[in-house]
Amino acid sequence: MTICERECLGSKLTAWAAFAGGDLWVLVSGGENPHIGSVSVGIPRKSLTGDGGDSATVSTFNVTGHKDDVVGNLFAARLASEFRCTVSVSCGIHYHALSRDALCHIMDEVKFLLADLVVSLR
Image (cartoon, rainbow, N blue to C red; front, side, top):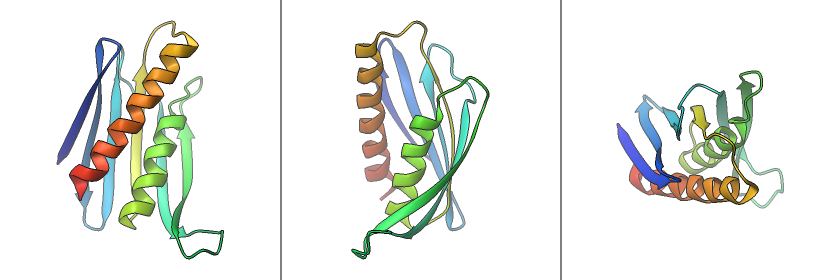
């Protein structure tokens, strides 16, 4: 199992990942109240641009009222195309009463967390 963490607004953001055969399981959680907010599945495919690059199709189940799919889909798409495998991402990050600036900061940290995870999984 691979674990990556980032400090963000006084709480941790954590990504756990483990290969299961040829597939990848990922849990992304953090903030003041970690939970299950979405489940995203990424399936690798060739890019539709025709440039020969890799991409992914992502399908998502969102818990009513949650917006964790934004992060879950980001992880599922990147990891599926990067590692050419099916990826399941369960995501739940919660902070209370965020400003727009704080939300942007969290998304920046999430992107760093994803980059750290990619490097760690290689």
